[in-house]
Amino acid sequence: EAGVAQSPRYKIIEKRQSVAFWCNPISGHATLYWYQQILGQGPKLLIQFQNNGVVDDSQLPKDRFSAERLKGVDSTLKIQPAKLEDSAVYLCASSLPGGGVAFFGQGTRLTVV
Amino acid sequence: AQSVTQPDIHITVSEGASLELRCNYSYGATPYLFWYVQSPGQGLQLLLKYFSGDTLVQGIKGFEAEFKRSQSSFNLRKPSVHWSDAAEYFCAVPYSSASKIIFGSGTRLSIRP
Image 1: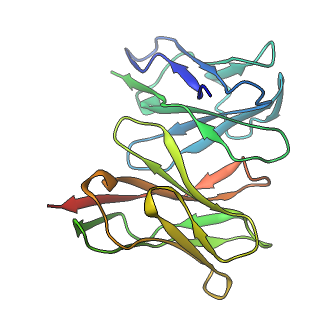
Image 2 (image 1 turned 180 degrees about the vertical axis):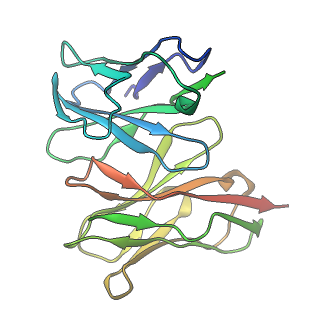
């Protein structure tokens, strides 16, 4: 069974530039999450989708972060404009609906310079 | 509010020695509890989970964890560590479902040859 796919693996951008990350969840997983993991910390939930609808985006900095899951399958997370403090690993995870265990992708490591 | 605390930031043990990583949680009801491992440059992999029933849970790679309600703990153990166990370990508890989770700050495990 294929796991959660994320791309790119690494990205370096200058501050004030924009960047987008892509995630393809495990087939059949209706629930999708984006987490931000700053160096030395545990992952922090940014946004949760159920199919193509947002369930929880209370911790998403909406002035600069946006995410979509238009067809209820893959998802993109965008940052515009990026700040130095956005440097982190962005992890995508998916699960079956109803509270199953979450499976994580390898993440995208973003460095903002 | 739900929370999870990992009091040890970094632990070093000798190869072949036993290991115990501490996790304390705060949760209103009987919690789901998880341990994830993150190897360098990798995503998070589920080691084991506790949902209900037997308080001693067996996981992958020879790990086990014991749920102790009286101590609000879910410590991870392994009788004999291998050099490949060097990684970051995260304890996690759900926000509201088993897949939407709050992570602890992590414990970095180093193995001494």
